[in-house]
Structure formats: structure tokens, C-alpha cells
Image 1 (spheres, helix red, strand yellow):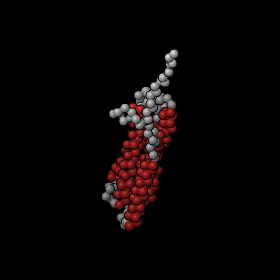
Image 2 (tube, helix red, strand yellow; image 1 turned 60 degrees about the vertical axis):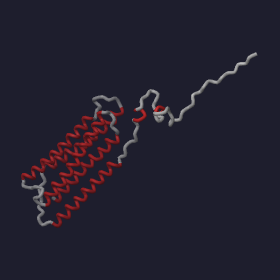
Image 3 (spheres, helix red, strand yellow; image 1 turned 90 degrees about the vertical axis):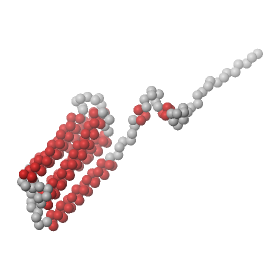
Image 4 (cartoon, rainbow, N blue to C red; image 1 turned 30 degrees about the horizontal axis):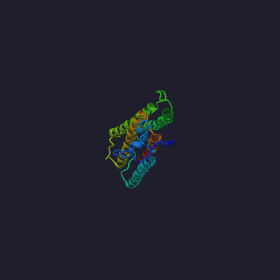
Length: 225
């Protein structure tokens, strides 16, 4: 009488994640079942905020050096005459501080917009555009202040105090323009709905620092120039 032997079914060997068919370097085993490779590649660590603090520290140190040079130059100068600050500088201060308020409104709306349904009512881009507009108004206002000094016959090389006025206000305006470039980058990320909160926070730290720095410079110019 013949006997029947049950043959066990063949089991495909499990391949380790680092192996695969020749020519693809094992990448096929890392692709999800639905074939969406970007699902694996989209992850990236949250960027560090340390770079923005290094930048802020470097800017603060440079303006501290300018302040020291101004005080020393004023003490050693015999031709230092007080310059009346253009009134537009005080309006510029309000404009820059107002841009900080609109930026904070945008930051609060970004969290709701990125975490919920993308509706027009919740889109915080409008507040970022308002911030950018106020920043440009500030820079234009600074240019107006320079024109007012020129109309009074005060140029960069007229005397030491006018030189420091142009130097400090121009360098600060350039940093504000740099912030506007950063804001353009933030807006581009927001429109593609790939804006990280840390990116917006880093820009906000820089922009608020520009506001605080300008208030410091205004007081310094009022006291020393």
C-alpha cells in the first residue's frame, strides 16, 4: 500500500532591508507598497534656531562697536555740533513697531491655517504682506530722513555726527531689507503649504530684534548726535 507524504509549501526567504535585486542597490525594498517614494524622502529634521541667534549676536556686537566708536569720537572731537533729528524718524519708529504687531497676528493664524482646513479666511499671508509693506514704508521713510538732512546741508562728510547718523541708519536699513528678503522666502513656503513653524519663528526673532535695535539707535542718536 502506497503512502502519501505532504510536501511543505515553499516559503520565500525574507530579504533584509539592505538587499535587493542587482542594479538597484536594495532601494526597491525601501519603497512603500503603493510606490510613493516621496513618502520616505519627505521627512527632514526640524531646522535648528541656533543660526538666527548667532546672526542676532553678530549684529548686536557690530552695533555695540559702532556705539563705542561714536562715544569715543564725540569725546575727542572739537567740531561736534548737535543735529536735530528729522521728525519722520519718530513716525518710522511707529511703522516698524506696527509691523511687529502684524507679524505676531500672522504667527497666530499660521498655526490655525497649517493645522486645519486651508480656507481663504484663515490664510495668514495677508498679514505677512502687511508686515512686508510696513517694512518697505520704514525703509522709504529712512530715505526721506536722509533727504531732509541733505536739504539742510548735512551730508555724509559734513561733520562727524552727520557721518555717524548716515552710517548707523543706513546699516540698519540694509538689515531691514535683508529681513524683507527673508519674509519673501517665508511667503513662498506658506503658499506651497510647506512652511515650518521654526522657520517663521526664526524670522520673527530677527524682525523683532530689528525693531528693538532701531529704538535703541533712535535713543542713541537723540542723545549723542
